[in-house]
Image (cartoon, rainbow, N blue to C red; front, side):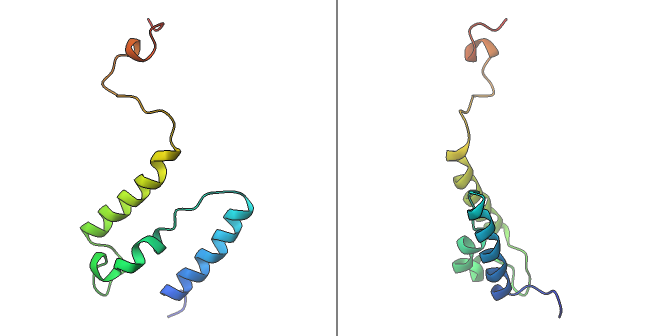
Length: 88
């Protein structure tokens, strides 16, 4: 079927994208590489979608990638004056 993705085509496309991202100094979170060893466990049979555990795994992988790159985190239940004593 034309246009249908296979593991090989995803690997080729990801390699091309990684090259472009490297040229522009953009960090990449390769979710395909992360989940590939566990596809049998985390992907629905005969389907391109992931099961609940797969979605959780991908979410945790994204969070682990993003968390160290985010700025300072604040407790959203804090009052503004707790964060900035000069606030009125």
